[in-house]
Amino acid sequence: MASGWGWGSLFGGNAAKSKDAPKNAILGLRSTLEMLSKREKHLQHQMDEQDNIARKNVTTNKGMAKAALRRKKNFEHQLEQTSAQMLTVEQEISSIETANINKETLDAMKHAQQAMKNIHGGLTIDKVDQTMEDLREQHAIGQEIAEALTQGNIGQGVDEDELDEELAELQQEELDNKMLKTGTMPVSDQIQRMPAVNTGEVRSGKQRVEEEDEEEELRKLQAEMAM
Image (cartoon, rainbow, N blue to C red; front, side, top):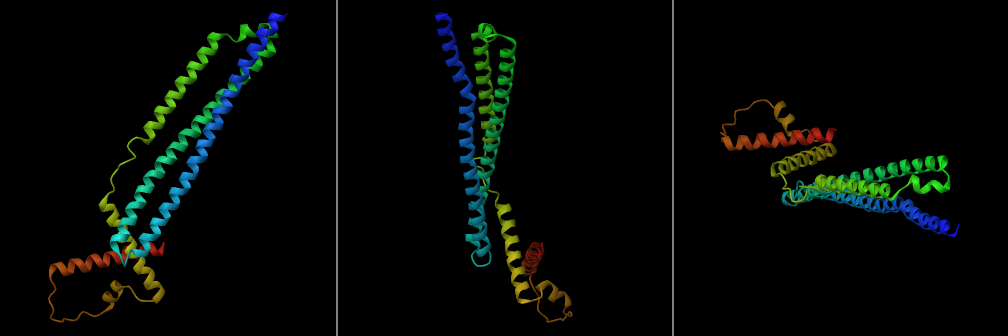
């Protein structure tokens, strides 16, 4: 009787540690998830701040506006990486919870079917070793997935053409906003309504191209502000 009680106590201690392991793992992952969520909010705030800077300087300081857009793109890349990490952690938590529920259900069924004297026959060292090996394998797969999700996100260059296009849209939006506040008719509409007059001035091809580009930027900004 004394010997049986000793073995039962030893097994009970190991079982308690094994039962707490999933809970401790989930607590650690939830703490990581909370940290990533705070970082996600911080990065979103940084993106909004740089967007506001670009809008404020779009007509007065093109260089500063473009630099703000570049910083915004960098924050956007970091935000995508953080979102991918959060997804990985959430999947890991779900997997552990599901595995733990399955294990608890199986243990309850075994205990209902067997008496306490048959516990060792229902849960052997080989089964424990196999379960731990499976958990280590799944954890390694989870780490590989996390690395694959974040690989290549750091150090990616910013597309200068994309920055120029977004800057042009901001300029168009700012100009349309001013025209809406002052009630001024867009330049393109004024030109179309004016009668053709031969002033005798001959514009160069470069001047015509610049004027057409300006009108195109005005139309883009007008369309964006109307949304």
